[in-house]
Amino acid sequence: MARKSSWEWSRTAQTRKSMLQAAREVFSEHGFADSSVSEVVARAGSSVGSLYHHFGGKTELFLALYEDHQAAHEQASAASVAAAKKAGVEDPVELLIAGARAYLGGAWERRDLVRLFIDGDGPPGFELIRRTRGREWVRQNAVLLGAGGDPLDRFTVAVLTSIIGEAAREVATSDTEDEAREVIEAAMTLIRRLDPLKVMEDG
Image (cartoon, rainbow, N blue to C red; front, side):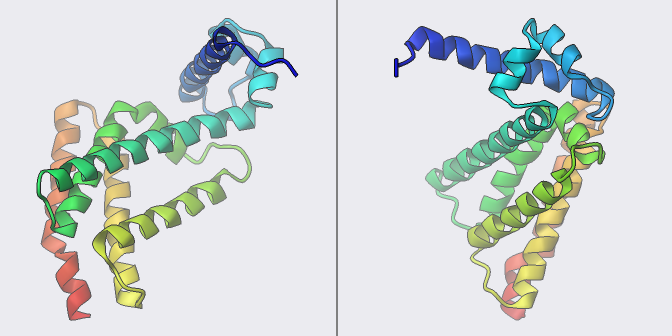
């Protein structure tokens, strides 16, 4: 089997990127149900055959967009936590806040996608994928906070994660960047006031 040249790989990556960008625009404008494959490929300057070759269909395109969005969130949060650790931050709550701040910054930058993914208009099975990703997010935050396995610890981490998630919704629907920043700062203040480490220790 012939190996692809670097030019062919580059072209394939560019085609995929163009289709995802077109899908982002079309889905954000019309929602998943009312969007058509033909409109996506027209905007991407591609063909229906090419879309099915790269993604398999409209559902897979939507899910690829979601996975890329989540990967960007995770990369930004992980980089922010790593930078905070390098700067000498050791308090788990402050590390959580560093990651949350990056996450919420991404919610503003990609607010069209956040609104798309929270409005309930996705392909069959998407809600299960979202809930599964949400549970994984809680698990990652539990590791960062050093939470134990008892019910109070699990509940505390779930509440903190919910605060960040709800803040992301508010950020994404803010009218201005200043308004979004106010929401982000309010969320950070709330997390600190809850003093989750003390709650878990007292429990």
